[in-house]
Image (tube, rainbow, N blue to C red; front, side):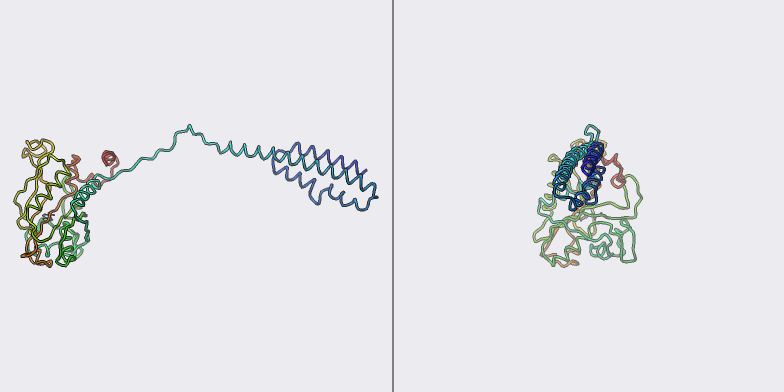
Amino acid sequence: MVKERINEILEEARKDIESANDLEALQEIRNKYLSKKSELMSLMSALGSASPEERKELGQALNMAKGEIATLLNEKQEILAKKALDEKLKKEEIDITLPGTSYTRGGKNPFHVVTDEITEIFLGMGFKVAEGPEIEQDLYNFELLNIPKDHPARDMQDTFYINENVLLRTHTSPIQAHEMQASNGGPVRIICPGKTYRRDDDDATHSHQFAQIEGLVIDKDINIGHLKATLELFAKKMFGEKREIRLRPSYFPFTEPSVEVDITCANCDGKGCSMCKGTGYIEILGGGMVHPNVLKMNGYDPEVYSGFAFGIGIERVAILRYGIDDIRKFYQNDVRFLHQYRKKA
Ligand code: DAH
């Protein structure tokens, strides 16, 4: 009777295993037939009370049934595991023929491209980069640059005042005073790129915020020839080997003599065109020999030390370089504008 039951169980197990569709179901079948609580196992433990002959016969039958069930389970397990993996892979399959997500490559604002270019040129001539505060004291922005309180030059440089003595700097020139004082009467050779502010109308050529690069060289025996040679090299590197410069007398309170520097127009090679208003030249910057008062106020003996300084409007250089018609475009972050300069960058 027991033997028949064993055969029945075996037959049942075969069917169950055959019809199992996934690994979970198979595990349940494994528990049903081979766990300690399964019928086969309880028959196994009941063997103890059987006669020796019975025990042998039934033991063999039980072992064979158990062996066959285990083998069938393992075979089916392999098949189902492979099926599960195939299904998973199919689900995760990536269609490589689908177009990908495209990202637009960014680029530098032409303003930064030009700032970096100017900086590179002066670094090549042995200048170091110095920076100063954008919120500046009246003392540095004006007084130490030989522009006392009642000086008319202040009219052109009205700005945003934090209080009577603190303001948004109107030019990068105050860094001259900071650097001269920091070098304790020793030589200086710096350029200072940075933002500047003025109370101004915002239109195509004016902005309440703009940027300059200041230059300053102080040493013994510095003369205006050094200024001219330095700026000539700058003009040629920035605007092309064919460019010539010309110095025109001008006035700045912190330089004496003061000059305005023009380059020959790149559009007409100096012949005269609409871009240079027929003059053949375009103004690019101001400069001069550091005024003795400025040297004195910032710790130098003007009998021993001399120097030259210059100030370049960065947007102006970028405008000339790229033919941009409106200064506001640098700050509006319009990608249609910026993308035009991506390749050049
Ligand atoms: N700071 C002047 C301005 O903003 C520009 C300038 C002119 C700077 C002559 C200089 C200089 O260092 O020597 O108008």
